[in-house]
Image (cartoon, rainbow, N blue to C red; front, side):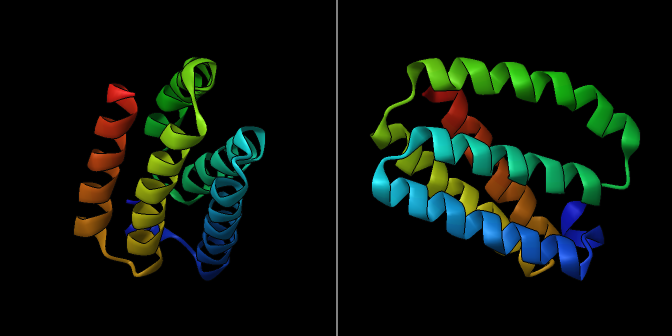
Length: 113
């Protein structure tokens, strides 16, 4: 939905977020990554036209972020960033099919780490 509905401004924020995540991965900055990840979640929420879906996911995102941070390492962060970047590139390209596939791969990775 976001790949199909994001505004030009939302896509630019996503690009900025992508760069922040990559910079954090390079420095091993887990806290900075979580700030960028929250920004990513917020731009996705704003761009998604399904408010029921975003309202249902919001508490889960917060809880999942806390759990992930408790066991995160620079290595797992780098894997997460790689997968986030693929999602963001697909959304920026308005490729709904690839963004859904990339998001599935990201969720699988996060569930396994």
